[in-house]
Image (cartoon, rainbow, N blue to C red):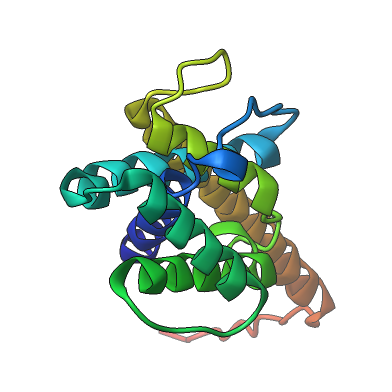
Length: 185
């Protein structure tokens, strides 16, 4: 699970970093609820990671970002292949498509929002400092705390359901009469 989250974050980060030119520029995101926040945080944390890992050795960052976002969009909406930045975009787009199909970070209760994840990624790549932007550490912390909270809630719900099931089964079983045996001494 941790590796999947890290890969998802890296993928989102790359996608975000690649969106900083022309139509790829980051815009202010509006976060209305937990689902919006987790999508944005995932994109932002990944955008920052992509910027730090992939963009340090790129001569033309704007062209690399455009190539990445174009590939990501294409992969998100279909099947694709080729060069490193293109392949990275394909990987991120495929991860986005999987997140949409399976629920954000494997949680079917969290709906993947492509636009918010991309906004977060763009701002993570650009290092945007507006009122909705988090630091990379804050985004990572939000993701971790939210996922831990959701896992705890799910575990508590499952435990309550199991307890109710066990109680219902116990109530359906006939009472067992105890036989008393007297022993003469």
